Length: 119
Length: 119
DNA sequence: CTAATTGGTAACCGCTCGGTTACGGTTTTG
DNA sequence: CAAAACCGTAACCGAGCGGTTACCAATTAG
Image 1 (cartoon, each protein chain N blue to C red):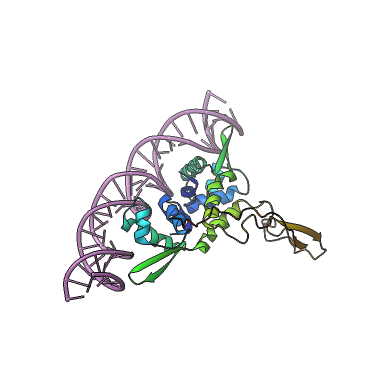
Image 2 (cartoon, rainbow over the protein chains, first blue to last red):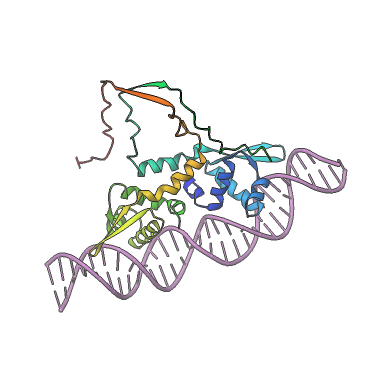
């Protein structure tokens, strides 16, 4: 199964979004989603076959992790279908870029990421 | 059917790539792909329902066109799964960019696109 | 008017998908 | 060693997909 077919299922997309926050075990993924453990196992097999996840065996546990490089075909299709976004990827050829840092109040550094360590 | 499920089928992806070069009729699309005309018609119905194509009736002909805005959910998922590419979209904040054009041999303008007019 | 072109729909069929339950295998725990 | 935890696989099933052929409506061409 390719990456496109793998992304067609909403459960698999949800699994990938969960894995985007870090690796997880099958049991944890099954607890976080409304399907049985064998169903999760089958989805993970397909996702791995599609190159979207990677596995690491740790004793009796099995850790699945998101493999972002598997999304390349999807990104590729998007670029084929939208060939003229802001710049065509080579718009900076023939330019010399000179970058100077300016001191400025930094926007508060994205506090909306991870760190729920208060729990 | 949503955009993800619509993109899961390779025939539909091929149809979209064809439509990326401009609108087309059902007959033309069926001639350009190895399936029957009713099959193309059904695919186009799904693609339109998914928001990936748009229709325009012109007498007895029906012109289908690519609707790039329907790809937004796909692009959105990619950004959710890859939250930190080269730059996080705000990496240029607080910088001053100074751009100077330099004269340089331009790479030969991508001759590997279309134009098979020799046939 | 008649014929041809264009395109949607209905009916049907084979196959795969996504889910479940049941079972076995391996590794850790007590 | 025995029990529990973790995980994969097999068998099964209902539903939907993707394809075909056959048919009909609408519009254009002669």
